[in-house]
Length: 392
View 1 (tube, rainbow, N blue to C red):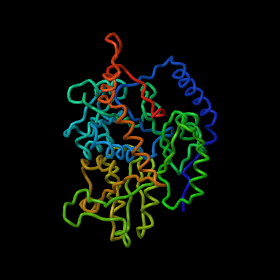
View 2 (view 1 turned 180 degrees about the vertical axis):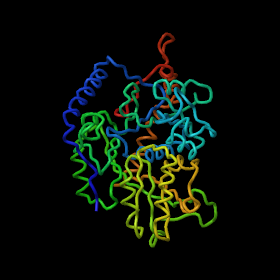
View 3 (view 1 turned 135 degrees about the vertical axis):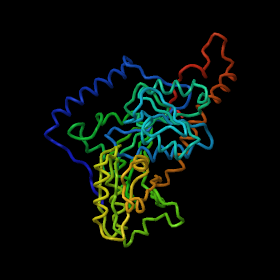
View 4 (view 1 turned 90 degrees about the vertical axis):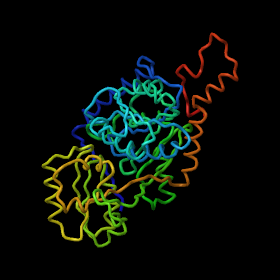
């Protein structure tokens, strides 16, 4: 059974109307070129949404990293939400999570060869990446959660839409969870409907396609969540892994601090004897009172039992103190990846790789030489370029 997660607070609709006017005015300033969007000679791919959290940005960013990292020098730039630092920070293997934020820290730990940096001012962050020693050979920059950051004009703008919370039926904040009016989706080059059930019928895809009402220049894809083998967070024995199928006679405590944990709850539930959920707010920093509550809830559950958490929560839990021995021995991390539906993976991969290859600085430099530019003209590899995915 699939659940619609949309909840509208109709009493707040007047405030949403005022908020919408403010966002429309800001967008108008960009469209009139009063506020400037800057493009770059290096390929830039933005991944984001027009809703508040929970569309699956991190697994989609990780998919792009895996797709590109073996062929190109990849950098991921994030604002570093809730980090205890300011300005531009380039992550190293030893950079603590508190300095760059949980999602950048997670990505740096999983993909140590990938450049990871944070900066609330994305234009400044990009300038550092393409000019600083050590990162100035970057081939492509992936911007995390940057759909509304219009000061950067990406070459590919990817919009994520949660299947369970379609932007078509949502409302602007604070009544709903839309960050901007529905028209904002027109800026996307690629739209991905995420967290789709695996048993969608052809008619369902046709209905979703019609609802999205995209322009011919926009491409639509559908993805679903795939879960890997769970690893024990604190145990290192050969038996320290579990699959969802192993939960057949087990009681599960699902421990999350992410924006939209409901999908994982519904995916894990059919495999377990029973499931309890402790759902904290997105990017939640676990305090001692939380740890005490987790210990108490888990102790009250019947055996056999396990705790399941996410990779993003793991990076915030691994350094906390006070977890009981029972909790530590039973805490497993559930890895999440995305997979494309309707055989869309090959097309998506070809488009992304083709865009990066066509617009890499090496390609631009070679083209500049072949075009025999005059000496007094700007070199196309050194000036900001508008890299349009729509023209590829």
